[in-house]
Length: 220
Image (cartoon, rainbow, N blue to C red; front, side, top):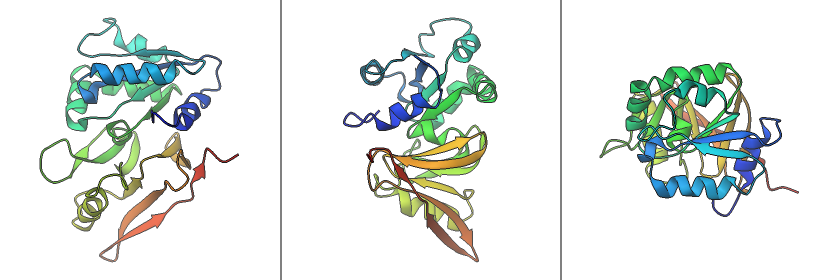
């Protein structure tokens, strides 16, 4: 949901291969911030889709599982990953999201909404240094969003890897997206010409960072 570029949002909707797909926003990580929900509707009402959102503070229904499983896309917003994961587990949403994933529903998100699908994510949820946080574990390894967008992301990810505090994984620039099919990385796409993703691992005691080929979605 980049205000100046609909490329990634459009790409996500296209993955459903359905006319007027049902896309639902989960703003849990932001505490269901109203302005964030408004931004979602402002972005997605421009597309031929059926937008909705799921608030865990004011749920639209008691049957959250059916609500989720009736969607074509679940789009998770940014914010506090640790608090989001705690609420999801309390509401049994971690189980429901796995069921959605296994049913072929497109799962997407940015920031906390990118971290959440991996075994671990790099997070600033706790004041102080960036730390590794256990997440849903649908995808193997770890994820570090905002890799080029926040000054401490890259060095913190390197530190965590060098100290064996986090699993190997992906550093993702703002404007770049990892597209997984099932558990396998299919491609890296971007809404910005120079946005990239990197695979990081510790080899012979040193952190190795490998840039990955990225498809710029704005290329004519």
